[in-house]
Image (cartoon, rainbow, N blue to C red; front, side):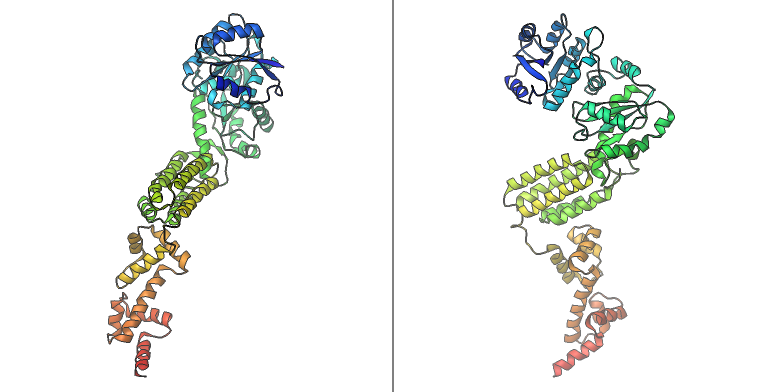
Length: 505
């Protein structure tokens, strides 16, 4: 059983760590606690622990000075506990011999246990009792800004552990559940890719990466084909395999770039693993969203129609790099957010609208694929429609307003473009909507209205058929006759004669 000394000035944090997991079941026992570095030195001499967890900022004696003092007499592993704004102090602690560090906001039982097992492993001890630096520690120091990848221990470590002068990075968005630990990921990838010497680690941001050594040009040429094997193992998250590079000084830059690329999975229907060059930005600007028609739909409480308009735009970007995933997500979030003022105007309960907003943004953050992203959007609009159900009339207002427009303008040379402009809707969307919801095309609705008015004129006036044809919007009398017979079953003249005979009877 390995003994652990916990040094932190926050009592609640210490209690949280103590009850975070079954320490004895994991092979550890918390042998003592201290609230500052000075007290920690005294407890160390008294208890002789095997490993120490030490906060960076504490009263009396801080974590940096604690490491400096304890290194005068001992090489015991010390793991620093830091916040995001304490980078400079953590750097100093490393200079004095700290073994590793954890961000307090990211500490979980698995992360903590993995770190402790790694630094207390007897096989990891180097010369003179100093723990040997690991790939994971060195990589995390660089990624979190505690070290420079172009100088210092990292290049030297790679030179002695990895052959070749060229590398490829594999970035994994979320390691669990495909990989349970750094060691599991490293061993799994080595079995999967035996021709590539590699090291793997988890980051403090709960992502994971592997650095592959490319010993010759053929190894680099085979990289795109590696994806198929990765897909068999990495199936619960997204990953990007980077193109070859040789300047290890670009390690942090490459890692950050590849992480950004992992988010492209929200734009792809059935793909989670990518090769870096697949995700090169497409030429030209992405299409513009129909902002004004969308705003008019939401102002009328037409949530289903607004959702369809947004979905139509999202579909135009699917399975492509026409827009980067950050812009894609922000556009959808902004579009939905812009609707909330109208939603609160119609909704029975504005709190339900706020809940829908939070649920959507959380869903978009966790979405891994385009399907998950789309489903979250559609569910949110359905909730808005349900929340506003009592305030928005149940009748189909689009079709109703179409009929009103036709009744007013049937005698003019109108087209569907004119109606779309009047209704403030996208032409293609309106055309499909009319067909899907009425079973008729726009031209059929227009003909129905015109022929109905022509029947009145034929039966009740003595105007010539040519005049009637022109007065209801048909410039070609023969075309009017053709449409009339198709819809009524007789010619305009036959209809007039039949109407007059009925009057005489």
